[in-house]
Length: 600
Image (cartoon, helix red, strand yellow):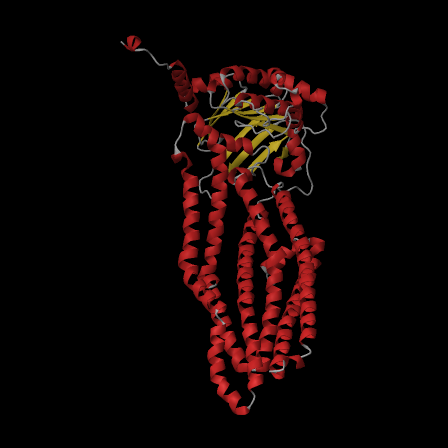
């Protein structure tokens, strides 16, 4: 039997945990408070009835004061109960939003690191934060208003048909027109517009994050606004969708809705004029006037009730799309842990007929790649841009899992090694290293949280960071990114190398770690490499061929395939792709700008 799909609200309530019951208690309080809020209107009608019956001697209407106090008591009780209900729903909503954020972060922590290359951190954060905020509004306010208003509306319908069904029906015409108008705005094909609106909001969040991060580069290279084309396009798309929904979809239905709900009394007057002759003929003019006063008072509730339903319904729509954005985070691929994990022995790295294709791509990034890095060897991956170098290296620490074949570390397939154990086996340094907004000590200690200050200091020394530490106001306790304390790209790279040295992993993956370093920093980084790679198996991605001349083995990758492998001398002698790349490299090194005299 097919399992019944849960509603969006039910799914969200599951995140509330042990506070889920508070939501239902809050809804009950809200419903009761709405019933209590109707009592003052009934008291007004009773007071009007007694006054009309006693006219012209008003002193005979002695129950009016009592009705006033009863109305006050019911109004006060309704307000108190409503606030009690909101307290319950807010407590549950806060727990729900908190659990969404916690579970979302916990889930993405289990995702392979390659997932974050395809999904910007700003997008993930925007999805979780904004979506959690939207669900908070729904569960704290909208849901209570919906339940309370539905109860209020049903009770109001019953009362309206209790005295004179004809005047009651005339008042409800405004409600019918309002419901039709709201469905026109929010139902049918227009419901899809809200999903498109949220998608546009996601894009503007992602583009905005990249915009802020790109400002330093734009300043350095004196770029113009065209550098932010993606951000501008995201803003325009968001603006167009918001304007279209407001101007083209909502303008006419909302105008009709407000006109008739705010003027519900207009329907009551013709009905009263039609019924007045009958009341005069029956001699029941006082009763007729009393009923008319009752419906005149109650017609004012229609506008309030329907406005609440409209805003609460829009909250449900927002929550539905928000849940969809939450699910996108929760559906992130999880790095599977083996049921019977194997322990790697040694630091030998093997690629055995490895193929890999990125999601959404038809062309393999790697195709039947095989090579071996013996313990203590340095293996260099070279080749044209897009050849598969970074992809191959990323399969070792399981940024992604190979589509076929196997990547082995210490004789065990990386898929069969516990992810935590594998991370202890592999250290990696990328082209662009990211440091936390924390002290140098904590940035380096992130590799091994239990490391002592002396161990961190030794790692910094091995990474040639003495000059960095000496110039900082508080040494390695200086917090990066505060009070004007910033590091250059090369300095950040050396701190990242200290982190890798402290980790003391037997396998090291280097993705052209000197790519953005100035000559002075590059010399120091090369010295740090010597400390980092000593006695370890090293997989090095290189774009500058001068850095791999001394590698034990060079793997040439082109279009995802191995185009050659061997030592530098062997590959140059073979005259293949590597030999051509080496010739081009040497030509580029000798190139210089000559003066006009030298040209002549």
